[in-house]
Image 1 (cartoon, one colour):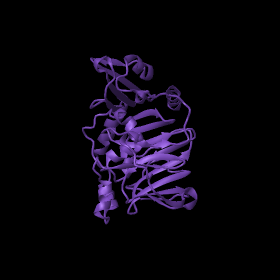
Image 2 (cartoon, rainbow, N blue to C red; image 1 turned 30 degrees about the vertical axis):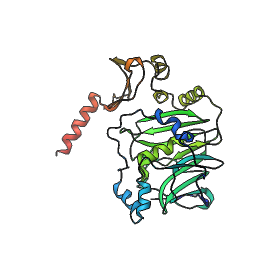
Image 3 (cartoon, rainbow, N blue to C red; image 1 turned 45 degrees about the vertical axis):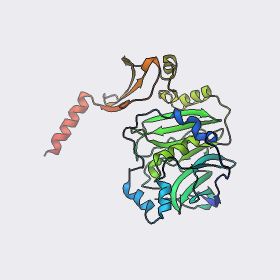
Image 4 (cartoon, rainbow, N blue to C red; image 1 turned 60 degrees about the vertical axis):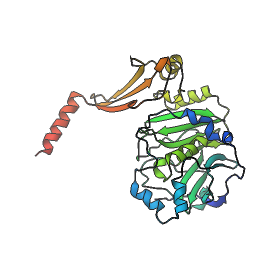
Length: 325
């Protein structure tokens, strides 16, 4: 799909940083062990939401280019950097970065059908391609918070926040443990990675790029400041996304509140929202507290169900009977 934008100009091919970095210098390594939270038993290595579109994106390219999209996890990496942003990419000469501004009106292609309300506007975009096929796009805009839009090709089950290097990083996960979207917020700007479900790259590579995303215009906010800002942005949300493995019961309660109930070493948080007629939903989050400390979210950690009142159940039954005649 092509996104028609009033959006782009200055199609400049920018080279990757020529400096060869030691592994400990990579920004992504600093938080690698802080994202291993969710059960990934159902995790796939390549987006499969739209198999036809994925195949179409890779059709007709060379084997070398196809290998870039399906890279093994032990390949070399480099860091791209300019005056606005830095992020890591595979160290491969076939990867090209087009640094774009809105005035050019050049289309950005994505993989699959774009259905939803996610933001695509920007002051600068980094359109990454391999043999002119879309690899990934980073959108940078001047704004004070993360994207509130919704992409319907895989729902977000959990958001993780990490304050680092003057940035607040947000990682949006799907139920299967795959990272769907990465974002970074600095002093004035926000960077968004195009959703993984709209790329043809492996989950490993997408997650590493997301971990490395940093804006150069850094915020002076502390972690506690960012936690408060997160609460202000969504007062009803539990702050589970701020937990760290090994956190004490006191910190868990400070962020998420007291659990609805406790079953053994599992704290259970139940949230209901009911309409006046009694219909609504119930969400349940199970927090593992092994040996009295927060651990990983295990399989089945999150569940969601509709709640039906007796009146609602009766209406459904009547409608089903109508369908029979």
